[in-house]
Image (cartoon, rainbow, N blue to C red; front, side, top):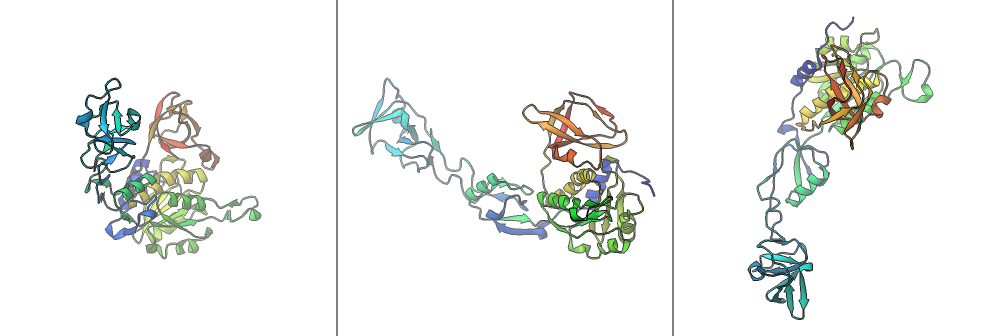
Length: 388
């Protein structure tokens, strides 16, 4: 049976996300800060201390009382008694009691037991005041933040040793298809090496989840049904292949029997045969078997699903000028691969069609979406692009 009705991309995403549950405090775990790279905070984090926690010298030089050197200059130096009216300090030292500024080393000179100051300084000049970076109790990282190396450094400097993060969603990845083999030794006409499972598993890892990939499932109804016997162990099931309308595409019929199909078919190029269902309260995403269509649907359906579970806020985008026009098809949103020159902020469309041409993705570093009402995006037009 052909696709009876194609959902628009926007509608399909909306219907899918309505069925995806965001993680709650029950899905939280406490881990050492040292294990926090790329994890997602489950709670807001406040600093436990002032940073810095003392008034510190910001330069090598001489601690002074600013009032005593307010008229100092090269032509009118102020002489201070060393170790009494001024003290030598290193960068990072605590500002000595009774002093309120630091004269840079190059703006002063020791002459016997005296120090000649050749430049006036204001109160607190060349001094890092207590709490000027962070105040104790200040919000320093928000729930949903993806922790990068500099975030870990900030949290550690604020006295944080452990963090509460969302656990990683566990996603079952199921590659299907009689045409799939596991190695080049088994190749013959009509057979291809299974690679979508590897790719989707890597995406899941990159986007914050834990993939559990099965072996290849043939186009056999009973064996496909068996995939859904233990779905409640997983936060999501992702099936690659078997989503179209051929005689060997059995996923839709199986999902109709074992669960609720939310949509089948999206007005997306490539990516039309994308299926989404719910089985025993577990979301099931059926991705097309053609590699580029699998990529497009992974970015537009799998990634948003994981982001909602994890409260991720990483929808980065940027504007870029096209150096060539893009042709699209009315009624379909096109997932167009781009190669962006970030120095010039210009982009060349790599390809806007071809569901099986995976090299069009590896040659790209971004993508843009051409909406269903647009047939041509002209050269020199500025489009919104997303990292790929």
